[in-house]
Image 1: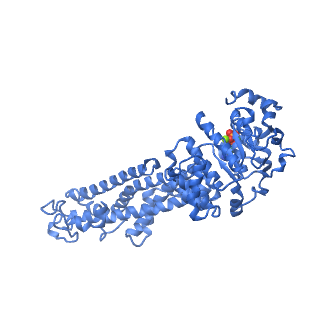
Image 2: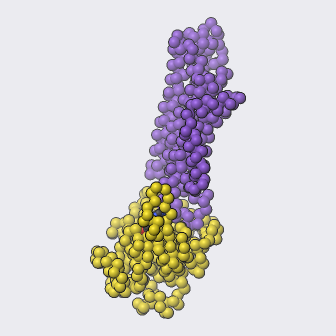
Image 3: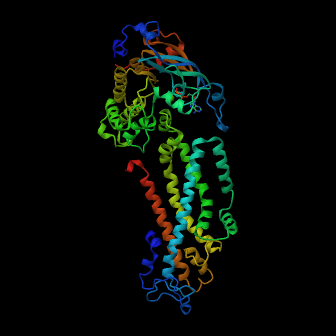
Length: 289
Length: 257
Ligand SMILES: Nc1ncnc2c1ncn2[C@@H]1O[C@H](COP(=O)(O)OP(=O)(O)O)[C@@H](O)[C@H]1O
Ligand SMILES: [Mg+2]
């Protein structure tokens, strides 16, 4: 994959990736400031390490419409914890999250439900992220039932078919159950569910790392195609640097709960300044051909 | 078995002498005779039709008691497992109290305080001592399901707590407790028989297998049939509920549909 083909965003100039005046013409869709998450440990399993170092330790990031921010870091550095904070699945110990200018981290009940529509999560494990007892149609329909307005009752069927088609699945398979699908197809179902509410931001937590290499490329291509079509912004989490290099406009490097370096793909991959980034780059296999 | 519980008259009529209350004292304790395959009990009543009619009370108690405790277990187990915290603390401590109690003695004590010993009161008492073990199973499977990603996904989509519990958590967590419940129907029927045998369960005009075994206890050395036939039915019933439990286990696997 050459560098130029990476540019999914319509912006032509590479400087636009960097949050400089030119690209700031695009609205900010996600902003996190000083996020800290300390997991409450309980009982005799309490370990000193987990109570002393937070899983997420003062992370700030910004994301503009239609942009992809790659988030890389070794396993256990707090990537999933951060994803759960951004999508308001967990509450931060301190700091705040704004989606489309609305704070998510303090809302409750109905207000939270309405606000988090604009930010959705795609999970790592295609096997546990779908309810095994529901049909694929029911899984993709559920967001439309929770939020009544995006599709009135009579349009829901059509919308579900539309979504399945959008992610490359046969709408006729809507009454099958998840176990009848392969890992890659299940991941597509999860993506269709995440897109049902037409979110501005999708946080993808290692969405391809559980898949076969051949399937990985298909799913990555699906993500880029969806972005081109729908103008979604991604926070794309991965420990695979090659995938991030292909997907992202900007990259943030996470280490022990902190973002140690952030910049355009070129800046990070070719001119890493932080020693940890250099280490990460040198230890990863060659980029995708 | 179920058919026997619903319409005992049909089965008890098979051998010609269907009425369980038609007794002649002179035939007291006699062995099998023509039209009376199991012989007669101590009152001279046809034992076969008694045993068949006993199916109804025994099964009713078994189903009623386990049904009640199943309902309680699903609700309390879900609440304790899903919410954790104080709710879990309270429910778990109450269960601990029951676990600390010797089961049979507990049931005897509680039954003694009841004025009437009919199907309902016996069922309630049996349920009272069955729900804790079922609830504990439900709680732990809810704990396991709660942390699966599709529950997080539902939460992320904005689903309310009730929807998450009813649509996602309970359907995926209910299989173990449902299987255990059907297995405990047999245990409850046995427990009813034991209680009645000890004289604190159902009493004479009722016709459970326990009542018959209770009546048999003084005479079974001379009249073995009084003991054997109700016990045989009891064992078959328990066994069939164990098999039902096995079938349920298979039926609950979404892959098998
Ligand atoms: N629910 C939790 N309770 C306690 N500790 C947790 C929890 N989730 C994650 N952690 C801890 O937080 C750290 C970061 O985990 P995670 O965010 O899953 O990392 P990553 O996704 O980068 O592999 C790990 O040390 C992990 O043990
Ligand atoms: Mg992770």
